[in-house]
Length: 122
Image 1: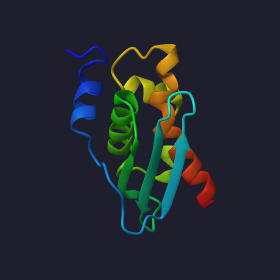
Image 2: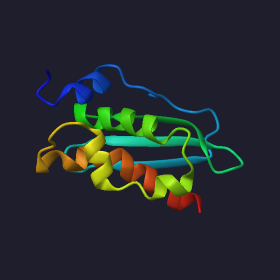
Image 3: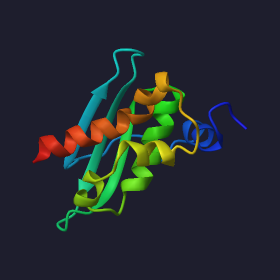
Image 4: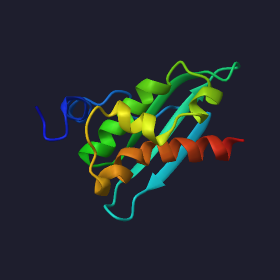
């Protein structure tokens, strides 16, 4: 088992949905000045407000990369309204590991970028 837990280890070594979309409907970016992590989330959304595709990319630590991968899996197929109710606690729980307080911002960086992208789109 990885020091960060199996889910984080697996998603950081084999990230799902890593990359970019050709013409995203929503794009959000965030930067963590404490560690230098930078992430961009891109979404395609259908006419019913359902996320049909989600991608992320950036310069990311293990935790932030795993979080981007986990988050994109969580939101694909869900409505924007449903995604907007996604809490920090739910994201941390999805990581399936104890995240030290100093690393919580790494685990939430992709979610913060997603929130920014949705807010900018409105």
